[in-house]
Structures are given as structure tokens and as C-alpha cells.
Image 1 (tube, rainbow, N blue to C red):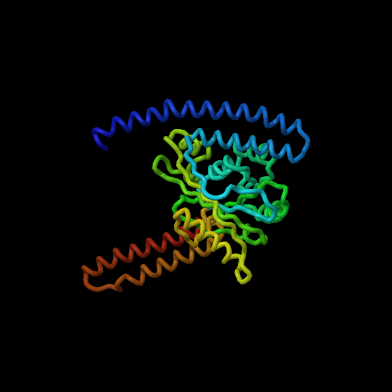
Image 2 (cartoon, rainbow, N blue to C red):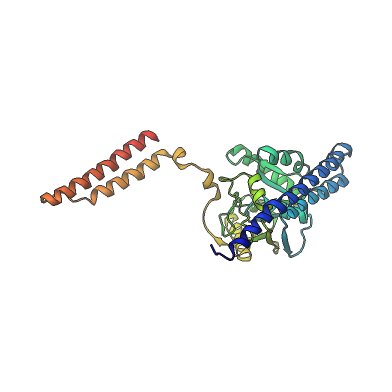
Length: 332
């Protein structure tokens, strides 16, 4: 804390929370009201056609643009604007659900995403369904298999909305890039890499879904000064003749990571949704036993009274470790 800067910081916090946030929230709610009036008029009143799809795409771009405005988003797009084409797919690194909002404020995208509950789920199933978005539950293998087939059908159709995929499968803190899933690279389609880089000068755009809801995340963004972001549309890539699917995915990942200045790590993003203790309790117990055996092997066998006293304490420690091992076995 600084005696001179503290009043300025306090004034800024009051301005952001008591002035900017209410204004931004009011504008966002008003834009939702206008959007739903027009969107449901089009959805229920117009027959299915290419014109209807274009109107719905424009309305969703408008709504996404209002979300970006509610954060005072400073977004810079680099590279050629995406053009709908058959057998083409766009892949991007993933920091938050706002990645999709930012990209869709620029051009319409269908997306593959976890199905959420609450008002987010309502928008997914009621509004974004019109673009051909695909929803799944990452804990259900059947959902993933079905989405893989629907994804291939969507990409093969030149009349559909361009498909955006986040191959990491989870939100990452925009400092690392975790392992890419194979799905987007195993369809024989041309892959368009998209690198998204956030500037944390005003706010960290990373959404930790384990700690806060998306509503809380939006509130945090709306009470900041601005969200600053650069989006890079990179050169499209095709799989080489002598290249495996995993090598292709790694090559595209490296391109995105280099442009966004991210560190590539060989971690599976699904691990944070995977409880190792529940799935493999025997493995946890085995490691505990190894630790207890190593601890006991370091204890001396005995000696003088002084060493016996110290040894007895060490033996008690070893016994406690062994007892903890047995207790944890019962707990598991």
C-alpha cells in the first residue's frame, strides 16, 4: 500500500463498481430484451432458409458485440476474416467462454461446447442451436462419440455456419497450452488456427469454473476497466502425407502457442475433471505404502539410551504413518 496512491485506487474501485458496472449491466439487459424480441420473431415467423440463417447469425453477432461492449472490450483482430467453406474447421486456444463471444462478435461461428445449466444453458439450447452448435457432457463417453459424428457431418456441409473447436477441452490460464484432442484433426479437413492472447493489465480473463460461476466471471469482467485482447487468424493447415494425427495436432498447437506466447505442456486438460482416487483407489493405496516403507527404512534400528529415545520417536512416527496408511485404505 502507498499512502499517496491508495486514495486514487479507492476512487477507481468506487467508479468501476458504483458507476461503470450499473451502466454496463443496464445496457446489457436492455440489449438482451431487444435481442429476444427480434430473435424469437424471426425464429418463429420465418421459414427455414439461407436468409433466416443469415439474419440469426447477424442477431447473435449483435448480442455478442453487446457483451464485449459491457466489458469495454478492446479487441484487435489480425489476419484474414474467416469465410464459410466446406471441409474447413477453426481451432483456438481456450481461456474462458468469452473466447467464443469475442470471436462471434466478429463473425458467426458454430461451436462444440460443454452444456451448462441455468441461463447459459438456456442461451445454448434456445439461441445458439440455430447456428448448429453441438453440446455434450464431457463425463459421458456416449456424448463424445455422438458429437464426433455430428462434427464430421457439420464440417462436410458447405452451407453450415463455420465450426469453431477448442481442442484443449478446458479453460487454461492463457499462459500455458495443454494437449490438443484429436477430433478436429482426424476429419481430413483444412484446419484454421486461431490464437487468442489476453492482456492482463486491467483484468485476468481466465475463467476458473471450479471456483466461480460464469455469472460471477462476467460480473468480474464488467466491473473492470477493460478487457484487452488480440486475436490472430493464422495460415490454414492441412495434414501432411507422412504426418500422424497426433503430429498434426502438435504442429497446429505449436503455431498457436508461438503466436500467443504460450508455453506448451503435455498435460491432458480433462485431468482436472478426473478423480484419480475414485477411479483407481488401489493406485493411491500402493503409493502410500511405498512412502511408508521408505520412511521406515530411514529409521535407525536402535542404540544408546539417547539414541533409543530418538529411535522410539522415529518408530512412533513410522507407526503413525503406517496407521494412516491403513486408515486411508478404509476411507478409500
